[in-house]
Image 1 (cartoon, one colour):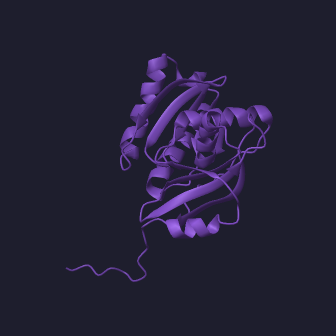
Image 2 (cartoon, helix red, strand yellow; image 1 turned 180 degrees about the horizontal axis):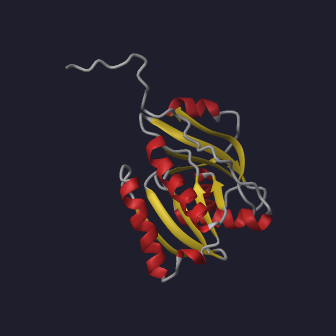
Image 3 (tube, rainbow, N blue to C red; image 1 turned 60 degrees about the vertical axis):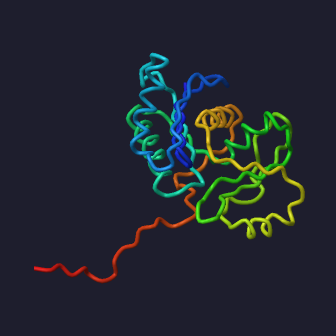
Length: 210
């Protein structure tokens, strides 16, 4: 069994096994990741009446996504993996969306976008070598306004566009399973923030009044 987590949009937690989703719990609150993550993990485990020690790996979506939310899910996944002594499987959240949608759309080329706020979209372009193959990244991930996005993909030919406001942790887990079984490559430990956090370090000491 794999515990799967994604917090690149809302917060999603699932447990998958042998290509099936056993349970999934979600919170679509785009700002309450830290408050929701523990509750969702506990809900998944208790719903199946399983112990954490029965988990064989932890999968996590690495974005692209905002700094504040994305790091919550990644930190939770790494903490669980270290505590249990199991692998942490890091995948692209966009690739998880592409794999999920490909099973229903049957498209060979897909442009996945998610909301980046400020009138911008995170985006990644994928190709599928075959109907049961894993998505292969063609271009991206990147962050652009709608106008910039159209220019960036103008030379790629025809892609089916999928605009998603949600990433299912179940899709993250199922993608991780497929990568494990096929010997595919996982992402490294660097999250796909694509935008600097909205926090700056003061360059001048702050004056404190007596």
